[in-house]
Length: 250
Image (tube, rainbow, N blue to C red; front, side, top):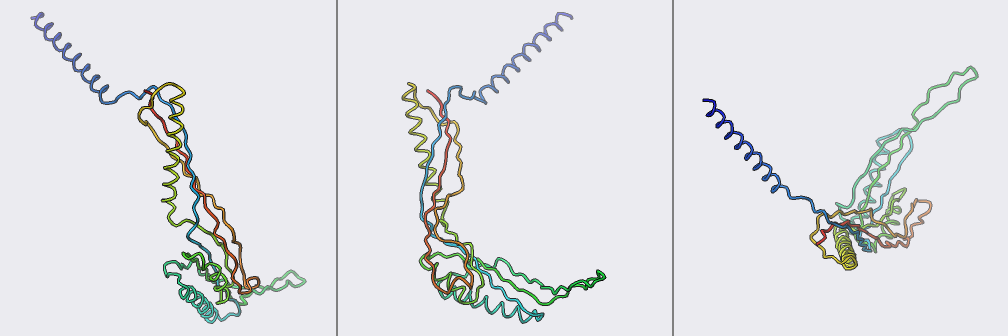
């Protein structure tokens, strides 16, 4: 009886050992080892593009007495006149966006009497301000639009910026150039080191913010514009992409 028990235990031990060995082999084949011989290179690609979109904002400010309804109507009439001017000059409705509409009270303050008693301030009037952003797709018309919005009722114009509308396309061009630059470096390193380049094991890209070379800008007001069209230059925009690529060594 004892011999039979020993035989059974021996068989169970052998089966257990084979099972553990199978699991170990399965784990090893499922997860191949990370290549031990690799090298990394960095590449940089730059593309200079001409901006094709301009953006600016304007504000219509009205202020006066305590008749708020009258002030709001005056502000609305002026704002509508400016927006109508923009549409008449081929600015699409979807490119005109109201950013804010604010109503502020103004106060009359009184001096304190000799006994230190100060009368409370009273509302003496209101200020109504409507701010609108504009996207311009015909850059040749930027100067006319800037002077025209002031002529038609805007008090201030600011934030004249130029951008590339399809920035993803420009970034892709810079990315392709960066990868090509990295590949050239990898070939040079492999040639100098006397080895062959294997497959790519990793690639990492860095897209910094685009750098603008823009001319023009600043802020206009009813006092300084004089209703003349300013000379506006969009300049250029440089987009750069850096890639880090790791290769196997054959």
